[in-house]
Amino acid sequence: MAGHEEGFNLEMPKVGVIKGVLAKDIEVTGEKVVNIRTCARPYRNYYSSNQLRRLALVARKYGSSKVHLSPRHNLEIPEVRQKELNNALRELYIAGLFPGGAGTSVRNIFTCPDWCSKAILPVQELGLMVSKNFGDMDMPNKVTISFAGCFNGCSRPYNTDIGVYAMAEVVLDRERKCEPDCKACVEVCPFDAIKIQDGAIEIDTTTCTGCIKCVEVCKADVLRPGRRGYRVMVGGKEGMDVRWATEVKRAIDDFSVLETIDAILRWYSKEAILRKGSKKKKERLAELIDRAGIDSIPL
Ligand code: SF4
Ligand code: SF4
Ligand code: SF4
Image 1: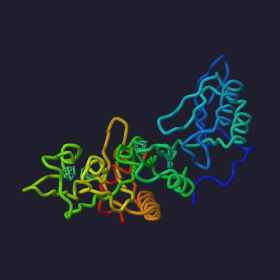
Image 2: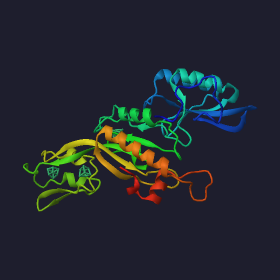
Image 3: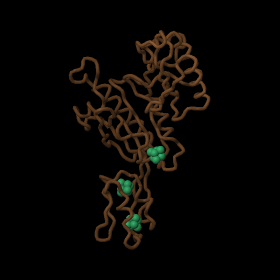
Image 4: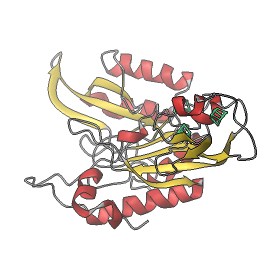
């Protein structure tokens, strides 16, 4: 399903052809150099100490001993001597580090760590499945996909092309009584989605995001976590024209997340056209949504 070739041809890497090798026509100490952007394949949201050792070795041996960590968890080795590119790639490849995460493709999947105690649901396996199916796939422009284990959104799901975070619906037990004068849930809700009217709790499900911060502060068990699932948002964007993503699905299961991402990517691949005034660059997902409308996505 992924757009990149099966395996990696160790004998035939060519600058400008391999995704993740950024050819720069600059010279350092009289030699042509390139920058290598690497990512672990299959995707992991961590790098092993052996991989880091290998990375350090390659950076020292073929580059200028520098390594850069990109915002989407790619590790980049700048200033690799071009004539040593094959050797550098081969040594990285053996350690499970591939060139990638660049160009007009699905970029490195970004998830939060699996050891965070705040997670409502784990997202790492889901990130792995999405990476296996869609990672590095050719797209009209770059596509970023992020997964977060809770509404805190440490992996920035709100301003990426496709953002997914774990949520839970809030169950209100009307048989139970609130503690006297308590307003803890109202005060903690970041979205003013919960109100007390005539002594009764009311939750506005259109603005509730399922962060369950209200549940965490409810000492009387009037509020409880209900069905858990994933909220999918689309059309977010970083850069100079920052956009916030819009919800298209909520509280869905992991298989439905995969189906939703598949549908969004197919639609984007088919419908994106050249950006206004550009002869080369096609629209980002957010721009297509602006032009065609979010309801055009066949979900
Ligand atoms: S988004 Fe939530 S689960 Fe993920 S790292 Fe942040 S606090 Fe933890
Ligand atoms: S789950 Fe979050 S958004 Fe919804 S009512 Fe509770 S605190 Fe507010
Ligand atoms: S639902 Fe819980 S937190 Fe909210 S007012 Fe009642 S007792 Fe307090």
